[in-house]
Image (cartoon, rainbow, N blue to C red; front, side, top):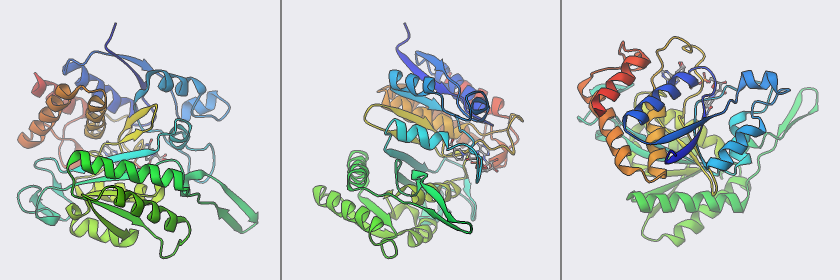
Length: 348
Ligand code: NAI
């Protein structure tokens, strides 16, 4: 019997190809995994009366407690409710953890100098973490038309969810050796909802006196992230701000092809890239699988497979450092398959 049984949700667009790549790398690293492949997404919605997330998917993740997931597309302005949001809410995966770190030899959009050689913002390699509240805020999906031409969305912020996520961020900063947690909010305008979130952040800071706590309004955070990202340390923030800041942060380290993520709850964890289904490049075999491979590394650490995680990390860095292979989003010409083969070769 395999050591780990893990749910695999290939998803839409480039999802299946980046999942194949991550699977190949995990196999080459010798991790003993039995994959339980389940389908979710736009095609599934057609067969399930408009539901992109059949109960069988939730059952599988509940049973195995760990999943690796490709992106799932969500129609804009109409159609089904996001399968991603449903999954996070149904499994109460309250923390969306997104470490944003430079890879060797990958330049930022605004400096040609390689990161780590003095050219990056903040004078070195970028290293920050975004902890995004994953279950409420602006993403409750409670929206309605009051009268034609007048619409309303309801943002929900609770002390329970805010305390839970702030505590998670402070504990993570302590465990990983970050000196500071930046609590990002807009409590100057949303005094009640974001005000409550900020209060919960302050309370968490009092429980962790060894860490510095910085309060920052989200617009100022966007500016600081570009000018001096490493000052931010671990950012903890509400759902919508975390979503937007994650893509901004991805831009600092070479784009969406790189940044991994994890959705973590008490009973289940789903590992997925920050990027979406990239319909513009789907099916061409050119997607960068780095983000999902790095998500798989986070998954291995979650499974206490630290040795294999470090080996994959080293192989990935080796390929970037030597430039053995590089996908189009980072200025290279390698296909997804060639890039994957290079990592597999580096592992050997
Ligand atoms: P996107 O992240 O799919 O693409 C944005 C841009 O980044 C595109 O130009 C794309 O080609 C590029 N890109 C993304 N990942 C890449 C990779 N691995 N390699 C190379 N280039 C890459 O964002 P977009 O277009 O806004 O969303 C497309 C769909 O994905 C939407 O339906 C959205 O709802 C969904 N989505 C799903 C997510 C998830 O499942 N967790 C997260 C974000 C979006």
